[in-house]
Amino acid sequence: MSAMQGMSHKERERFDRLFQEVFEVLPPTVHTMLEEAPIILEDHPSPELAAELGIDLENPDDILSGLHTGVPLTERSVSHAEGLETIHLFRMGILDMAGGWETWEDENGQEWGGSDRIREEIRITILHEVGHHFGLDEEDLERLGYG
Image (cartoon, rainbow, N blue to C red):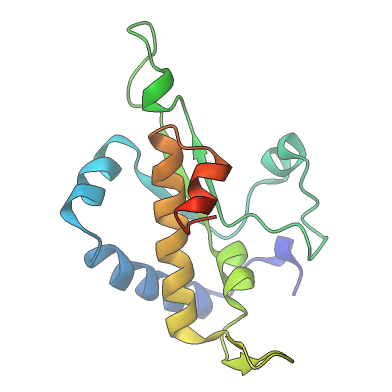
């Protein structure tokens, strides 16, 4: 399935149920943070956004599971408008990072795919993008295990 095709209605409902399960058990502090940068769920980035980020949506190696847009708290000044921050989660990217809907093992015996792995990838992506909201860069997030 090409990234541009998106998900079927049934797959989207399945993913969104898993997202809701993860969201409900996030710590209260994360919920408070998400009031400042709400989450928008999309199947994949728009072609315009992908082009802006240098991502080829037809290339299976170009995976984007989340994106924080706006000015991180650490870079804000009084001149920055508030409320312009969002966290985008891309269902297809998260599903790809998790390994798909079905559970399978790679040649090293590492388990991939399935609902548990998708939930974990959703959680990691949310926390990764919340980290960007607070000004953490990719190296910081990698050190914390959210890279």
